[in-house]
Image 1 (cartoon, helix red, strand yellow):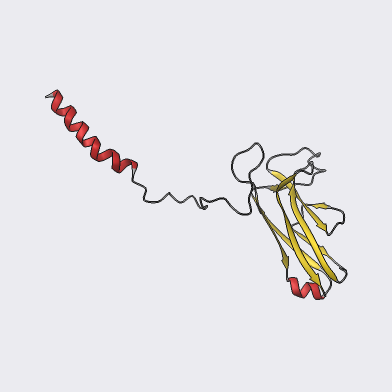
Image 2: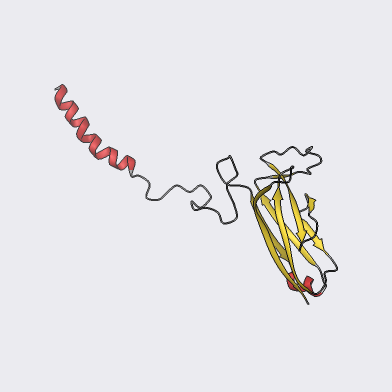
Length: 149
């Protein structure tokens, strides 16, 4: 009797286990794609994705005719903090934005928009980056190109 019960359980497991292991026809949705994000990078010493960070020019052609460029930044997964208020002590969840026109000085700020006015005619590169309170970059620098007529 005991042997028959063991055989029945063993045969039953043969039918139940494959269904249990193969119940997902596709991975459960987590709200994010499984491939690596093109605009996120791995933080040094940490696992997972770095903060979401995008930069774009607002009304590029219209503003270029007025000899200016307006940059708009979007972030997620990081709190923007002034490095001076953070006493220049970096935290994994804090950063600030750095704007730089061509080879000019870096402008450190927490502002998600930045205006470059009175641009000279020609080609200009705008570099936008997230940085920790001690000015180490977080992720990749965004390069924006604008032509001023």
